[in-house]
Amino acid sequence: MGRVPPGDYAGTSPHWLREPADVNALVPVLWPASARKDDDGVLHVGGLAVPDLVADVNTPAYVLDEDDFRSRARAFRDGFAGYDVYYAGKAFLCTAVARWVAEEGLCLDVCSDGELTVALRAGTDPARIGYHGNNKTAMELRRAVDAGVGRIIVDSFHEIERVADVARQLGVRQGVMIRVTAGVEAHTHEFIATAHEDQKFGFSISSGDAFEAASRVVAQDGLELRGLHSHIGSQIFDTSGWEVAARRVLALHARIAVELDVVLPELDLGGGFGIAYTTQDTPAAPADLAEQITKIVAGECAALGIAVPHLSVEPGRAIVGPAMCTVYTVGTVKEVALDGGATRTYVSVDGGMSDNIRPALYDADYSCTLASRASTATPVLARVVGKHCESGDIVVKDEFLPGDIAPGDLLAVPGTGAYGRSMASNYNHALRPPVVAVKDGQARVVVRRETVEDLLATDIG
Image 1 (cartoon, rainbow, N blue to C red):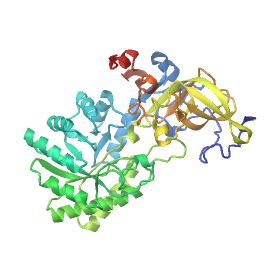
Image 2: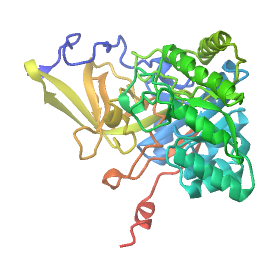
Image 3: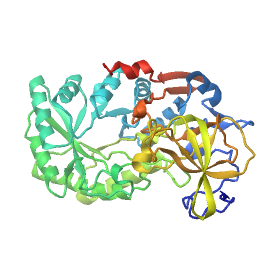
Image 4: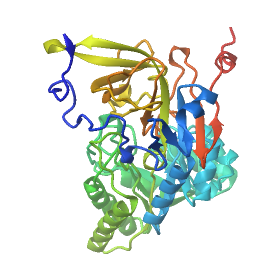
């Protein structure tokens, strides 16, 4: 019994994974633009050596490249010129990030009172905030309306009544958009596909609920119907889904103009733009996406004989995802027997599903690299796992790592900016890691590591 012979991984690894020519090399599309390895194989991000960086904050730690984040934000702002670009804060939000978003000219999308609180703390103009969510409470809605949030995306008939009641009590006219489901089956994991019929978000176009929602909003004096909102899912790489969705949503847009005598000024096409987590992913540039989506909308509007509404999109993952990586320390390495007499190398690190739940939740794939040194050892097929009491606690399902990977080595996982820290938990009473922003050779903690005192503060005994 032994390791899988080099080059002989049939049945033990995904079809797209190839043994690298150089196990020390980075795949640039997966990493922040500043990421590089020096002659000793040490990973640098934002001008800082990762081992030096984590020596001050320990591991696991999220490392966020500020320049890379800002560059990707500008790419969407400029690529989607003429649109409103809302950064989807659910991907990752903290006070510093909210400020960067505003400074780069983007609007901000929030979906909870906590996210709204962070946005307002950062000084975000409330008029440039959109508020999502399928079950906003009356308290949350009152706070949003009172703060002057520019648009609330309504998601149910109950919510239409709630927003109208709050607006009436506060004596304001609140801008709203109607979340619609277009019946599009996005090619992604079922839990992040959000425009098919059998799920919790929005009003169905095909059932007539979406038109009925528009009718009810128009009948409320305290509400201003700004437009329709359609989000077809997440981690999407082609525009075919948007083409089908745009056709159905714009047909409803045109019907509202004719039957309700209301020309909606806006249309939001959501987000969901994919990023490269592994070598199998091929994301498009924002400008290319914008060109294709704009062409789709313009064509549908021409066919319907209507003016093109003011458009908006909501990238989150595509901005913050590649700008961040997570750094771990290897704790144990073991060989596990597979069928056919082969083995797999299991590498355990000091984090896991408490800092990145996506592999367990969505079967998401990630890559990784040895970050603290170079290696001349033969690559082996490895699985990087966490320290939690779950067999599904997998950090990286399949990747080639040096055969001499050992306790004390640092591993870095790219593409963890979206839904890593924002979905992190205290499972097994783990302490959530810090977020360290790097820029021009300087580091600053923008979200500190949780402490035992934080953990016990809510445990009143």
